[in-house]
Image 1 (cartoon, rainbow, N blue to C red):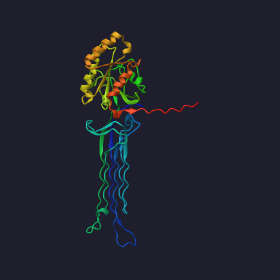
Image 2 (image 1 turned 90 degrees about the horizontal axis):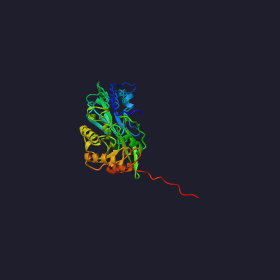
Image 3 (image 1 turned 180 degrees about the vertical axis):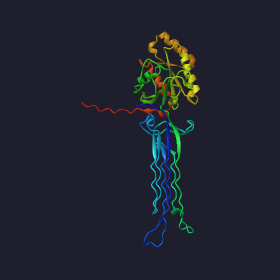
Image 4 (image 1 turned 45 degrees about the vertical axis):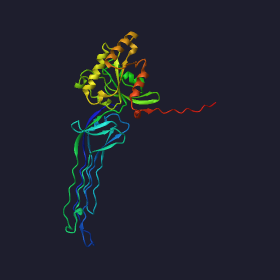
Length: 344
């Protein structure tokens, strides 16, 4: 399944049915009178967050969603049928934006959450509604209310507890594959990762979700490389894990490049808790490790962990550091497997 995190959608609610002008004309009934029914309501357009989706690819193939109109009223006091509503099923974490792509109409953060995007038009009153003691034979009825037509944008921000950051080829995908059940594409060229990947990481009988996004380069906030379009997927994370390639000639410069891009992106992303790790130490000897670690700690101004996604050296220590920064309400306890009783 292809990954799609931004989609433009056109929606229109149904118009209400017209009211009916009708009079009773029945044999053997002495007095007639108005009996025109009201029109039915138009269908509304709703959005609902459902489980089992992690992409907006369905909206690549269908962008127009039109609800049905209400049926017009009929004689014998019959009200028209209401129009069927339309439900847009979106993944959890989807933001619904107005046409300007800035105004947030709704943020779908929980399974089962529903929000009305376009209300259906009310049905018009039939002439029975206007009957009174002074007007016993009204010959007027209201038309139905028109539906609402609008254009909206759907933007998906994945729900993850922690996020991976780093330059291309920093070893993010290898780390995710080593620590979780995810199987991202891994290769020895930049921009191997073209869309975010999610993995469930387990450590010390707890589990949390980690997101891997495509690598950033200098000027990403201006659209260079893949750009910063995927940074939205780590906005909801509690902690960011920043991986720095230990084999680089300038580990401090690589670190600062990512920090500059986070600050240029804006929002609260640059203020989130971060764990910094020097990756690929399996390719370094003791002297090179010490030199790279000292340079990176001087740039960070705090403790830096060392690890290798290939040899798994220092992997658990990094995961425990990330786990310590995640809120307790985000952590899920691993179910304890029941063992069969011993039998001779």
